[in-house]
Image (cartoon, rainbow, N blue to C red; front, side, top):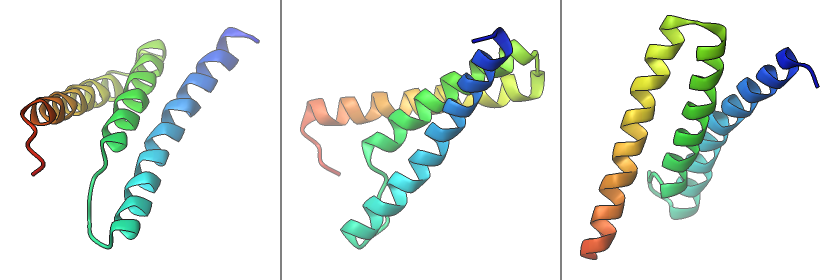
Length: 92
């Protein structure tokens, strides 16, 4: 596998993770009969963002790098808040 093919695979994997998070959220909300965001949404967001950030850095695309960097921080922070909430036993 060539270098370009590897980076294309990384980019597509990141995009698939991002698409998967919306599918997960939609199906989970349909199952629960109300709009909810499951924890898996944030993990898929983090993985997708990390892969797309790596791809953007490789492509040297400053707009894409900035956008994915900000998203990565937001997704990580949401997972931290969820972990803290779970530690307290708070189910809100």
